[in-house]
Length: 470
Image (cartoon, rainbow, N blue to C red):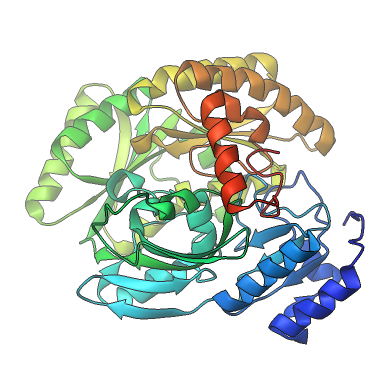
C-alpha cells in the first residue's frame, strides 16, 4: 500500500471520530485500509487516513461536519465492486464505510416499498422482496457483495434493464447528508411529486460527489413467472440484432445479453460449466422471457425456428429447468470474475440500440489495428445498447505499461463513441478512470453546470474529490 501525506490534525481527528462512532468503529490497521480504500479497479494503490464505520444517518452527519471543520476529504465505501475507481482513496482521505448500516425496515405491502440503509447488500434486498412475495429486479454479477448505496450512487444497471430499467427507476425516496453536513429527506416515497426540482435524481449517479446516501426507500414489483432463457449461437453481430428485433417485436423479453466465443471459452475453463451446445459460434445471445403458459413456449420456439431459417441463428438451447436456467446465465454472469486474473482494461460504452452493430465493428477495427496481440473479450447488454470491451493484459507485460497503452487506444474508441452520440460510461460511473474522457459524452456547458451543482452541495469540495472531474 502506498503512503499519503498525513493530515496535520490526524491524531485529533481520530479521537473525535471515535467519540462519534465508538473506538471499535474507527480502523487504522493495514488490512482494513487496503481493503476499504479501493474498488475492483487495480490501477491505484489505496492510502486512506482511516476507515470509519457509522451506524446511523446522524453519525454520518457528524462525520461530515467534522470533515468540514478539518478540511478533510471523504470517500464513501460500499461493496467496492465498482470498475471506475469511484471508491478509491489514494490521497489520505477518510473512508466512510456503510458496512454496519445494513438494516431493512418499514415494508409497506400496499405501496410495495421498503426502507434500506445504504449498506444493505443487493442480494439481501432481493431475498427480502422474495420473502414478501415480491421482486427487486435490478440484478448483476456483483449482487452478492454490492450495496444499495453504491448502486444508487452509480445508478447501477445490470442484466434486467431491458424490462425493468436502471436503479434510478426503483428509488422512491432518499435520505442524504450533503457535503456541507445537512440531512435531506428527498421525495418521501411518493410516486407522483411535481412540487419543484427532484433533488433525489441529482444524487442518483453522482458517485458520492454531492454528499453521502444514507437510506433509500426502494420500490418493489411482482415476481416474474417461470423465467426461461435461450442461448443462441450467431454468426455475426448483424444476426444478433436481427433476432433481437424479431423476438422483441413479438414477445416481452426480460433480458437480452451477448458474449463472444472467447468469453465463453474462458468461463467454461474457469467455472467447469458445459458448453450450451456442441456448435462453436463467433457470438452468443442470451435472451430471457416469462414462460406464462404453453402458448408462450410455442411462440418462443416458433420464433427460434424462424431465426434459424433466416440464417441468423446457427444453433441454440432453451432452459428446461431452474438449474439449467442458472447455468445458462452463469455463462454470461461469470465473465467478469473469470477474466479478472488478466487485469483487464475495461471500457463500458453505449449508444442507441439501432447503431450497435456499426458501433461495435468500428471499435473492434480500431482496437485490433492498434493492438493485434492483445486478446479482446466482448460482452454486454444488447437490449439497452451497452457494450463491455475488455482488453486482457498479457502475463509478461508490466501493468503500468499496459494501462498506458490501453489509455491511448481509448482516445480512438471514445472518438467513435462521440461520433455515434454514445456514452463513455454506460453504467459503471466516471470515477477516476473515465474523468479525462467526460467531454466525449458531455458538452462543455453540461460539465460547467455539473461543477456548479457540486459547489452548491459540497462548497468545500470534500466529497469524493477527484471523481468525475477535478
